[in-house]
Image 1: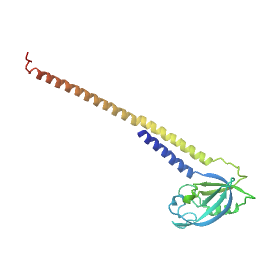
Image 2: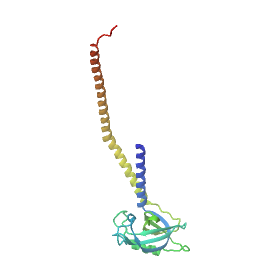
Image 3: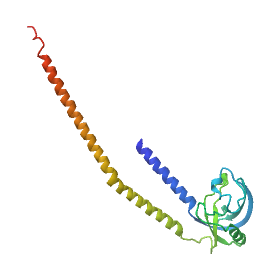
Length: 225
């Protein structure tokens, strides 16, 4: 049972860290922008996936005037981005140019007959049933829908985190080997010593009581013939 609990906790931790990184790290979509507009949006239970009220176009804790960008992928599927400042809070994109980005989106609109493809850098997820939108942080024109880019930031961040995780594990193993294992070994030896002494005491007690019982047996009357 304990083994299942350990593996369950490890899997939960991996999913939690993986989901956090997938939401936070930048992603790149090659799309064609079809519209860019502002819309009053009520933010309620999904407030965690929006910017703080004091940044960007946020006007209150419930209803905000938020910028949106509609786009289409090469296969015809659609995506909607929000365009909010991140400020100095998490995630650390330090975005304060949502107005300029909206102007770039307006200028990059195109039709299916004369498409203009752009790479939209964003973070976050799109969950329609919860009105959650990824936040666009940059728009870059590209040559076509097949354009690719190397995610250098993701590579650097993930490599750094992997290195830190290995270092922390190595430090923990060294600490355990030098500090915890000797204490456990001494405790085990002490327990074995106590157990051995207890066994010797029990054996001695049995010997004493056995001699006393034999002495009492000498006082018994001999059996009649």
